[in-house]
Amino acid sequence: MAQYAANTGSKRPGSPWAYGWTLFAGIMMVISGIMDFLYGITAAAHNDLIVTTRNYAFRFNVTTWGWIHIVLGVLLVVVGAGVLMGLTWARWTGIFIVGLASIGNFMSLPYQPGWALVLLAIDVFVIWGLATSVQPDEF
Image (cartoon, rainbow, N blue to C red; front, side, top):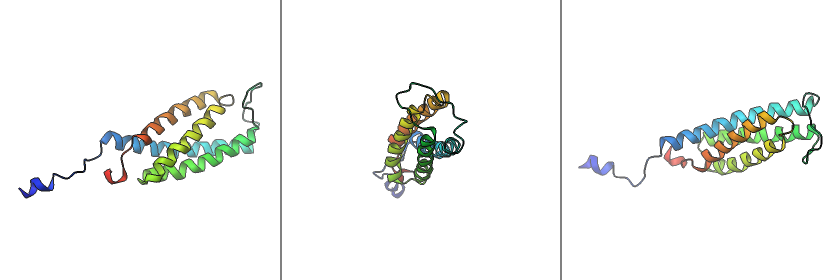
């Protein structure tokens, strides 16, 4: 009888799928942040390596794009580490930061079209994983 009473708590254990997507989102945020940081350094320091196109509506200097990616990269790594630690603020901040990163990836389509499309797809999965993730007490 005592054993039955101990197992009737009101909390339901978190879904393994939800935990897996949260883990995926945190890891991808850290990896994407590192890649954005490296891409930003490349664009800011050696802007001759980045090919630009003409007549694009969102034309920026490549050095400016480099600094944008450096800042986004640092933010993604910090918030991704917070997601991996199970911090609630990191989930909601992560959705916002990954949303900004996806806008930046969309706007960098003329510079690196293939890579930008891959990052956009990953950003969609990360946002979905963060939005459907479990609460920290359910880990």
